[in-house]
Length: 238
Image 1 (cartoon, one colour):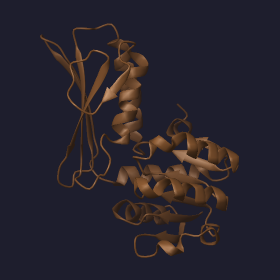
Image 2: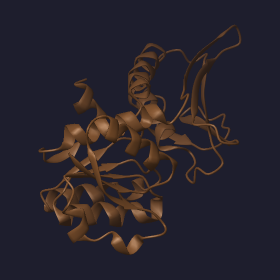
Image 3: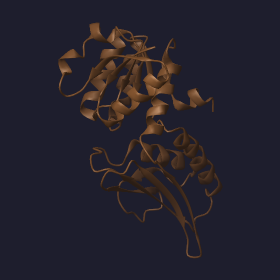
């Protein structure tokens, strides 16, 4: 399979390594040194594009891939206010868009554990729910897309919770997300149910970017030849 890498930073280089190990070919690499090479003509040399850039560029990059007629794997977070616009554009162009807030296979299992725990705790008002997410200082969005997905999983399963906030809160209808940006850590998400007598805590910690890159390459392989909006649930068949 021929892959276009839109974004060739640390993640892009890790994706390249894994893609080559799996027998794929990188036919286009876009970074800050050659943005003029991101054209429809160049994209059409690829079978699929993997996009890991920044929120201000992501949406236009997705649309360009739709116009070029190739599937695009979305690895950028922080653009979700444009989600409906992107989905509509994908459908209009009969395109392929693989969206995930996190490509780690372990994290996607963690999403399910989070939902199950929330359902079990739905009527346990004595427990306060909080979330802490820790990322490297270069991460631009806060809270992370992963933290938002986790918060949405809690809200779906606890009727008293109606929204998340990116700060400490004592409001019973809010899910508290605290964002920390420290050094060069890959990413940690901690969800805690705390009462006067005990607490329950679940944690997912990324050891390296390799797991995220591996998931992105799997998503590219899965998306090739398909149409529409795809997610990790489709890939993992869950």
